Length: 254
Image (cartoon, rainbow, N blue to C red; front, top):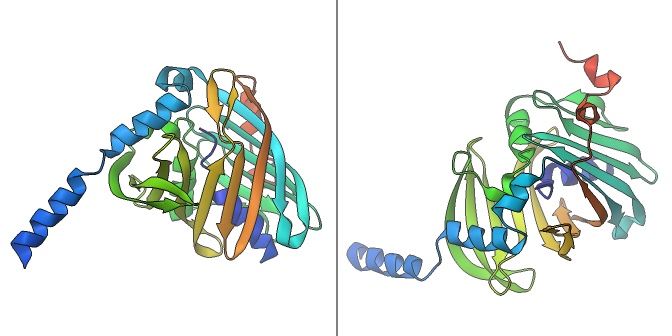
């Protein structure tokens, strides 16, 4: 659900500035890999199941953002709601408050370096899909999945899965072969600073009610590593007004 926060990393770092035989071999290699949807189904079951995921209509997570190399830390809050609403708030030492949101129509951000800005074009398309509240389920209408290989990710044996999105972008998810849980992802996004690739490592899975979520999210972008540690998650208690753009953003909307 709320773990698809690839754009958050960019927001926080930015202020810191023989033909036949060959075909046969490939087919045999692919046949040894599990189908991507089977891998996904195992993950979904491990975190509580599709029914439990769909029963949740909104969430609010609180935690701490840490950038160890810069000695920076501060509180972070993540709000999400069905079908595609999101709001991220972070307060960063020495930088100030950073906000990023999508209200179902407008994607926007506010940070001390750029001020209030509206997203458009490719960046807006990607923001809308990132806001998908049920992205854990990888709706076949929005995502095309294919198992790429068995590899090592963050020191763990994982299945690498290509995730092609209806916005034209391609991500890669990594699922732990031992537990079935997603170990992380590699995401490429358009930002105001250009195209950026973010590596996300997910761990510290804990149960909140009937749903299990990762509570330690380590993101690497532009040579900077930041960690988000989630302390609490509350479901179905977020008012719709939470996602209303602030006045500074409303002034930009025509």
